[in-house]
Length: 97
Picture 1 (cartoon, helix red, strand yellow):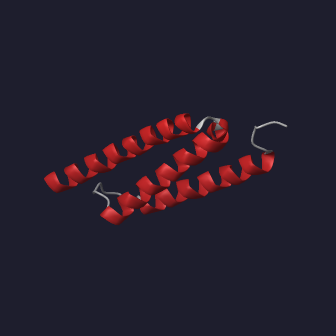
Picture 2 (cartoon, rainbow, N blue to C red):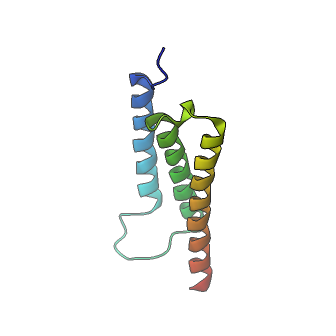
């Protein structure tokens, strides 16, 4: 028995990632011609969607679900740290200007 993801799992994950990308684009208001900061709810939605997409990429496409819990925890911890740094930077920039 193989531990590789099946075709169905890969396709469902791909469709979910595409839907989340569209959600991120819509919430980022890409249709606007002028540059302005995103509202907090929109930035939070983009960061949450990005975190979920990163988790799915790691677990399905890189097959991290077959790794030991220590590796899963370490890699997901680094992803969460990265997202926290991005969110913190956004909040600092928003409060400063």
